[in-house]
Length: 223
Image (cartoon, rainbow, N blue to C red; front, side, top):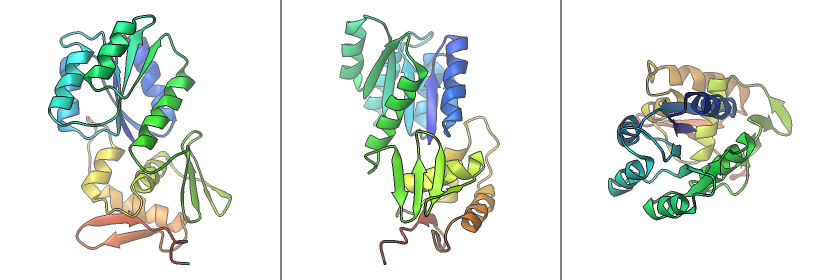
């Protein structure tokens, strides 16, 4: 999944980027509201962690502008402890959840996983497609109960296909979720990663839809 972290405090921002990246996600970051608003307008994110006290443009204004423009990605806002009015204002502006500072990183990751599940059909941290099981909490994959060793890019690609299992995803779309905003994106590399995944997954798990892209197939559905 691709996550945007918006936090102006450098140490906390770096912690968030490291922790969310270590959980198997692609992470973009912004340290002010103007940059955050721009990224949320031009890029597709699966979720956003948004601090409210930002320079240039405050977090509530950023969130209101996103929602007014039809940007409906899940947003977890960070508020000052005890600032109940910020929580209320954030929810009214379109936030999906909130977390008061200071917080435990594991709680933030758990809340983020919950937001990502709401965006798809997955009701738990364990996603399954036929014999393939992906544990989003520990960033692990099993096939027929056996651990599967994947690189970080292979894991991110598989997670994106499992999040949208049965749906066709283009190479460009997959590339946008695999690489951060400032990375040198090349959709042709998706073919390489798909090829590697196919060699590790049961035959027929990833289907090529000519001229459109790829989709993950539930091999047990036709059994």
